Structure formats: structure tokens, C-alpha cells
Amino acid sequence: MKTLRHLIHREALSAVAFVTAGFLALFFFFDLIDELRWVGRAGADGYQLSHALLFVTLSIPSHLYELLPITVLIGTIFVMARFAQSSEFTIMRTSGMGPWRALRTLLALGGVFVLLTFAVGDYLAPLADRAAQLVKVRYLGRLTSGATGAWLKERQDDHSFAVNVRALAPHGGMLDVRIFEFDGKGRLAAQIHADSGQFDSGDAWRLDNVRSSRFDHGGSNGNEARVEHLNTPIFQWHTRITADMVAASLLKPDRMATLDLFQFIRHLNANGQSAQKYEIEFWRKVFYPLSCLVMVVLSLPFAYLHFRSGGIAGYVFGGVMAGISFFLLNNVFGYAGNLQNWSPWLTAAAPGLIYSVLSLGAFGWLVLRR
Image 1: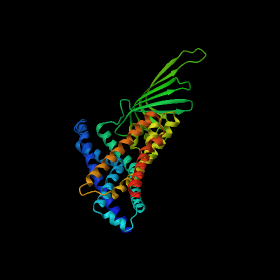
Image 2: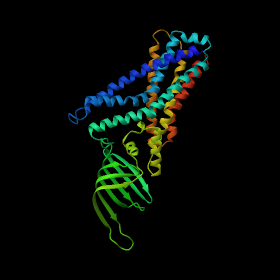
Image 3: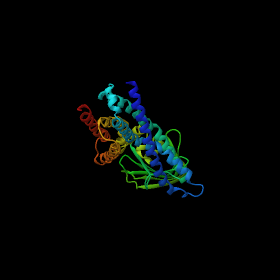
Image 4: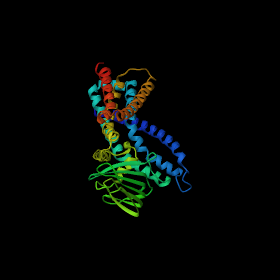
């Protein structure tokens, strides 16, 4: 049995690696074509072809994380169908490779891919994506999200603050920082506008070229409302908002590590902000690596099919379509759950549960009942 397990694992690993390399090469080509539109826009010393190549290369781990369940399905379907076509799997069955032993063999292989997917998605991809964004910031000038940048909220005692950072600078600082302070009654108490800012050590930001306005709404003693304007070159603003939180607001949540997502969700909940999108992405990061187990189970029935020579291409095509449908269903449930305010963990787990039912149903019908 050990020899048979090694044979299946070796063939499946080779097939998955080949399919993954093919898909990554395709994504590399498309990403490079898309990045060429930025080449030369910042002048001769700005974003060049070498920087575009570096950016696209650093984007490979993110694509690898997204593609692994799909390529695992396609690679294992190809191997199992090829074993069936050449009657190798029939010989394995006569040698004692029963359905449950074959299932355990594939689940062990799927466990390796689960660990690989988790490691890539939680460690390699976030680091590579952050490095890729720094390359773009350094040579294009800034990193921003949409027309207004990042918006964050914080509560300090009975006052609340709405913070807007328009963009991140190439040196890691902030550009065009606006802070709105509200008192306990929800009235605007102060407004701070800084041209730039730095994340100082500890719990403070150092803001440069600051223009602030403080509003005195008067009291019950009949005092008139007043506005006090002040310009200062440097201002220290104490806050618990960190550089990672600002970067998280500017980057896509699927490019963040699981721990960073969890901490950012806690910050949003503590300050009364909606965290639905980030909670869904957090649970997707938890459940997504487990989909590799579902994919290897889905591929096992292909070893029990009987078809003539040349029919393997149709089954591989079916595997490609199944993998694409899983990817689309995963995205559709994410958007629908965010719009309909579904339970985050159920929204993230639903695609995997649906494909688990399909794979176990196919295993029971084509394997156990034959």
C-alpha cells in the first residue's frame, strides 16, 4: 500500500504543479499587459518596465492562493482519470486499494495542500502584496483607495473622531490627513487638516503643516458660539489607530493576514463601524484552505469511470469548469452576504459546504454503489 500511496501522491503533485504553473504564467501575462499602462507615466525616473515586472512577480503569491483549490481539482482529476483510462487503478483495486483506503490516500494529499494554501494566504501573499504596493507607491507617488482614501473612526472618552487619510506616501507617511472631532452630543468640536503625517512610535501621529479649527458652541449661560483657528507647523495627535489599520483600509481585505483582519474587525466593532465585509473575508480565510480537501474528494469518482481512449480531455474540461464555478460561487456568496447582511461564517462556508455535498454524493453514487 505504501508504494501505491507514493505513486498516487507523486503523480498528483506533479500534475497539480504543472497546472498551477500554467495558470500562473497566464495570470502573469495578463497582469503584465495591464501594468504596461502605468509605465512611463511618472517620467524617466518613475515607473518603468523593470518595476512593472517586479510588481507582477510579487503578485504571484496572491494568485497562487486563489488558484490552489482549482488547480488541485484539475490536477487530481487528470491523474485519477488517467489511472482509470490505462486500467492502472483497476490493478490498484485488485491489490487491495478499496474506496475508503483510496479516499484516505487522497485526503492525506489534500491535507498537504490545505497547509500550503494557508501558509501562502496568511504569510507569503500578504508580505508579497505589501512589497508590491510599496514598489508602486515609490515610483508612482502614492497609494490611495477611491476618490477619498481611507476613513476610520475612533472613540476617546466621550468624544469620537472621524479620520480621513487621502493616501500613503512613498516613504510610508500619510498625505492629506483630516480629523473631525465630535463631542458627547454629536456636535463638531474640532477639525484638523494636515498636509502630511508620520506614524510615531507609541500611540501618536506627528502631523505637519496643520490648520485646525475649534468650535465653541456656547453654553446655557448665553455665550455666543465661537470658532478659533490655529496654524501650527507640527502637531502631536494621540490615537490608537496604527499604520497597519490605515494600510488595511487602503488595501483589499483579501490581501490581509488572518490575524490582521481579526484585529481590524475588533477595532471597527469597538468604534461602532460596520465590519461585515471584513468578517466575511476573515471566515473566508479560515474556510478557503479546507476547500482543497473537498476538491480531492470530488476527483476520486473519476478513477471509477470507464471510458474509451481520448475521453480524458472531456473529464479534465469538466474539472476546469467545476473549479471555475467554485471560484465564481465563492465570490458571489461574498458579495451577496455583504449586501443581504447574512451571517459571515455561513456566507464564507456555504460554497465549501455545497461542494462537499456534491463530492460526497458523487463518491457515494459512483464509488460505493458500484
